[in-house]
Amino acid sequence: MQHNKVLILDFGSQYTQLIARRVRELNIYCEIHPYNKIPQTVSEYNAVVLSGSPFSVRGADAPHPDLSHIRGKKPILAVCYGAQYLAHFSGGEVAPSNTREYGRAHLSFIKKDEPFFNKINEGSQVWMSHSDTIKHLPTNGVLIGSTNDVTNAAYRIEGEETYAIQFHPEVYHTTHGKQLLENFLVHIAGVNQDWTPQSFVEETVEALREKVGDGKVVLGLSGGVDSTVAAVLLNKAIGKNLYCIFVNNGLLRKNEFENVLNQYEGMGLNVKGVDASSRFLDALAGIEDPEKKRKAIGNAFIEVFDDEAHKLTDVKWLAQGTIYPDVIESVSATGGPSATIKSHHNVGGLPDFMKLKVVEPLRALFKDEVRRVGATLGIDPELLGRHPFPGPGLGIRILGDITAEKVRILQEVDAIFINGLKAWGLYDKVWQAGAMLLPVNSVGVMGDERTYEKCVALRAVESTDGMTADWVNLPYEFLQKTSNDIINKVKGVNRVVYDISSKPPATIEWE
Image 1 (cartoon, rainbow, N blue to C red):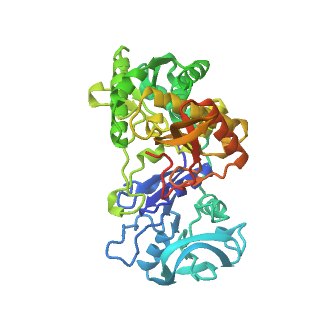
Image 2: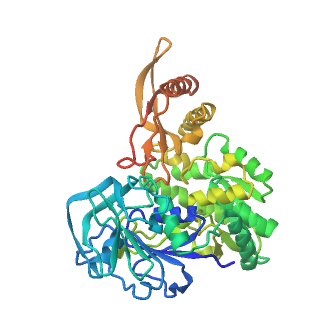
Image 3: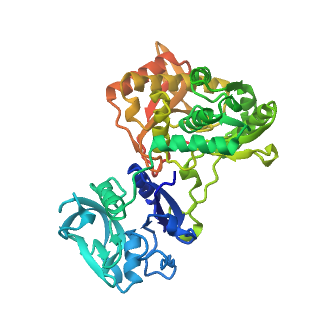
């Protein structure tokens, strides 16, 4: 089935991925491409969105692609920089704003009978983020929306299906942003809403059968959402020709190796569990630097995975749970926050000598879409709702060097914290939670004796994508009970603290 498609041209905005996610939420397939790598055949796209940018259109280094093969031929929605770009280079005028227009604003004027603003009323909140403003509209520009401070907040171009806005419909702060995107894409551009989890499953299973054929596929499972959904999709397509390897690196949560293996076997997956705990701990002995720890863990994983993969005969494919944010390419010429090229491998970046072809069934999906596909496949909601857990596991939650005793302490602390969140009905209200073992001892008193033992920090954050995060205001009563349980039940810990740092400036993990 050929889906309707939307092309999003990325000018370097930090919000570009968010535009794509909002479009996908409307069950419309879209792709992000850098502004200077426009696909040669735009005929296959039903509409085009121009993103924001950290650049000013008045700057000498402003992105200035040739859109002559798109303008007037495809419906266009220009957002922020895109709106200023169309004005500046098409007979209008963009000037510096007297005040930087950033934050909440409200629509004070909406042109009557404009389908673009269907079901959106004056007073609706929008989110501004720009230091320039459109002083004069481009040739044939028609004003359709204003805020109190921004006269030309929204316009369309007569004779084209081209619309432009100076605010961001993709952020949550724009109250009716999703409605606006629906108005443009569905009702103006006529894009079909045919991108659903069910259609993805059906088409992907068929494509995997065609691509892989009778070939054997090996997949490194992590226990996380992405690799699990990838495994179930592949299992549906090729059955026992899928060989899953789940490696215990000794840095998993308490009892996680056994629990996850049991869960996978209950799902009918062909899984081999490999307990390589001692191999990883030996590789980490005496290493304190966080990056060196990550490298040691990654290298040990490659060795273990390679050993196990070589025990299988005639394996031709390596499957990975790579998802769309990992493969979006925005060339560094944009210089903006989205200007990164990420190469991501769920199994740690396997070396060329394995000589396997790669299959990535989830590479078109965002994280929230992966969960929806997983639900369509009938995967246990508890597994799909699991908090993200870092690849290096507790290795980057133990600050300083790693020993078996430190792992034991942190596993016990983490289990009390996570199980407590579940028991109190707080787990699903938290995006990610964990405990950190600090490289300091502190004085305490237990009974009549003086102690000099470890300090642990608890961390719980709320987020939508991990790019930014706020600490969660957990109930004092919960924190009090959790602290008491940890100190009373975990030998070696006499102090518990709670991390109330947000990201930025702090990161979610401590290392």
